[in-house]
Length: 354
Ligand SMILES: Cc1cc2nc3c(=O)[nH]c(=O)nc-3n(C[C@H](O)[C@H](O)[C@H](O)COP(=O)(O)O)c2cc1C
Image (cartoon, rainbow, N blue to C red; front, side, top):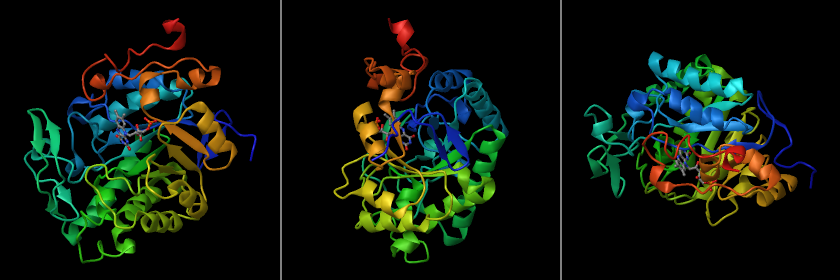
């Protein structure tokens, strides 16, 4: 047990945080053309009392676009848009990293100028994807050729460099929730028989390559990783998620990464305990936390930081509310994905709510 709690400052890699409360990454579909706006800057600045903001999933490469109006980080206009966001967050003393999300098969030709989404193998996800014309079935993706994969991995390094140019404190590699790196990890989407499929070492090669590319570009101390080993989100299955997590966390030991971030979920095994024992850097846990549970996990040494998703979405001053025990605004799910200021920048802070 330690004396630490959510409000104890902590250093993660090269980044010093004034508390252990992270804003979890949340896609909000409010960046038309992939370029962050003034409204996006206001939204993040309102939440800058977090120890660390992790942005919504952001495309590192034009081939990784999925979903309506999600931001990118591969051209000059996007860098300039993100600069507005990082300046606004830093102006109030916040810290912010960008989540790099290549959606892989969770996309549609509508988002790719008519192109076919890519994946480890030509296996479509069940169900629909929401497009401007409404829901459409997930298309059958194109299996990446082995010779194409290094360029996709390199896009994470390039995006990491652009992140620093845009003023970010670092990047988070999105290895969770059924997007491209998670598709490589999984045994139902990755049916490859080359160096990128089969054994856990081969299935993890893409994800670990993306982490290494970003670390090489900007230094490991500015790179975090998010995984969800055992989640079935986006029609993912892994025949042995415990072995997958063990391999990844062990492979990243001694690398000096900023943090390891585990998406919350009932995985049927002690994922947090495995991550804690195998990985030697800061561990961030997530999923339905309140202050008491977060403080207990930090005091017990199960976690170094905790990320809050929907609570942060609806409460721009979440740290102050957690500190004082104030009531929380309820999130409005109808305005989660897309729209304008409503349900985005109009959630009241405490003083305004009184
Ligand atoms: C509106 C919304 C968008 C989300 N988008 C992302 C995303 O872009 N990347 C990601 O890793 N997780 C995403 N998530 C998952 C959250 O980061 C988090 O894991 C989840 O909300 C559970 O945490 P909570 O119980 O504190 O809300 C999203 C969640 C919500 C509610």
